[in-house]
Length: 231
Image 1 (cartoon, rainbow, N blue to C red):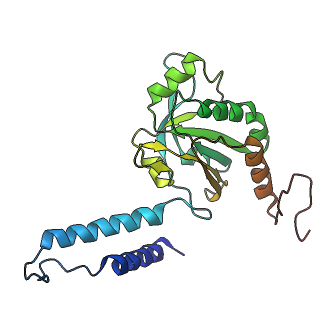
Image 2 (image 1 turned 90 degrees about the vertical axis):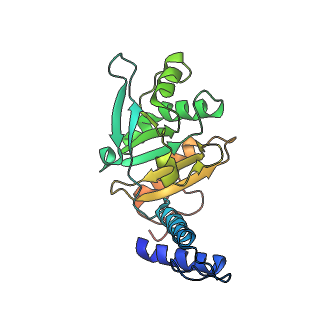
């Protein structure tokens, strides 16, 4: 289903839930026109529909991003600007985490780093993102909590990317523990969101990546070297 169809279906649902929307300047039940309120209500509904239709989903093109990233600690060469396009023609493991200077997050960040060679042998790159600033990322890395990090940490300080991927906690302003596997054509093939208190599994991420790369039907618990269904 294309984006226009999704928006129209969602808008129709909103109309059913919220009642009719009077055209600008039309008389209401009280006999008083509310042109500004009517237009504002329609705009709010359209923005909600647009946001819902654009939220990242498996099978859809991954939302683009262009973010500052910490790519080193050498003075003058700490930061780079990275976009989704920089990873075209490769698999990408894109994981969001809640915040720097926390407890569960560094275990995941170090775990991905420890297994980076495995991901790269599978033609995949790894990128971490939080809503912290690039300066926060750099300070955390320099403090030594993450060891020597060999993949970039991106700073989604405006929270736009986390929102587009549907993992922003609007109340706290931090990203949920979401992970996405994006194929070389830029299409999302896998996504998972964990409770903030529970770290993700590197082994499961690798297993799913390898399963996706078979192009076949992989049954419950499939592991590399096993047959896929129908083969």
